[in-house]
Image (tube, rainbow, N blue to C red; front, side, top):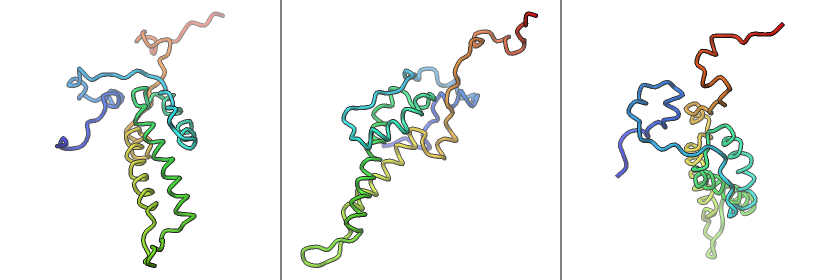
Length: 159
């Protein structure tokens, strides 16, 4: 049975919001930063989607190495959606059986399922407009990150 209520907000997002809920999250694992490697099993269209979507989000710190399977599933869903869309475009939405009865093209069902999966994975990865409002990219640490006083003082300029 699934848990009740909405899914918990990731710790990284709570930290960026400055939430007081962080004190209850002491044992959550932190995945390694970096871009996951594109799986060899992806077809050409899925690979194009990987380069168009996954790599830029990984560079911003939104997608991490551990998210490889979810990212691959997103790209495969995109590829399957385009394939189904092409079949529907060529064959039409309605087909005729051997007995002359009109039936829905089975590719429409595949298209619908691919769209549903695509959106679910996109939400998990922070790729939809609504999910983007809840995700913040990590900022690069600067040289003064360890010096808390540096933000209050300006460096001396020789002259």
